[in-house]
Image 1 (cartoon, one colour):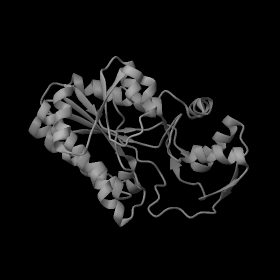
Image 2: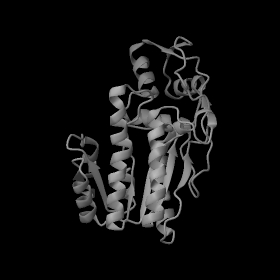
Image 3: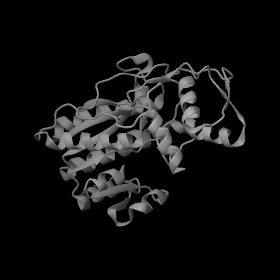
Length: 282
């Protein structure tokens, strides 16, 4: 995301923790400024005072499908309190726009709002906080509701990483029956969505209003079984999958939420091309 905004000529500042791994920012060298946030409100206000930012793209989150009691407060800190400090910084500095990140897990059974998990509930709770800052402080804001994302250098232990591993080792992988429908979107397309959202907000007249919500999806819904077949066909991998060996998770999302698309944005990367680009980069 930082690279995409920098490539567009924006002056980019990234907010990191004292313990953050900055390896993925090294390739950007002097194109991105780094600010270390110590978790305090005073520190956040100082960051905004120094920065003179036009806007904020907020992607930081603690994402858990299921949580332990010990993780509940961490979800609140990462997904609500950090964002609130960002909003206070934006309000104090007169920052014009704010692009937030939501999840389609907020829409269990395709409903207007039914959180699959506590993580999804915290994401919607933060979106609700945006209403106050938009109305009271004139902030222009939108939430981009992401569907499943993928791409090169993804550190998460997601499906494609598991498929790559078993293709190399010959191991078998226990999976569900694979009937759930997913709508993957390539990471570069996601980055372009944030840029488009920022440009739309910047072009709006000052005055805030209600924050908007848009769905960011690949536009090619596909069952998990079919996705594995496409991966194998695209990469030439031999995959040993034990379909039906695992039960579906509690509150499994079996079909992606629709939602209004972001105006002026369409995904440009097909699933087959995205898989090929991802494999080439490994």
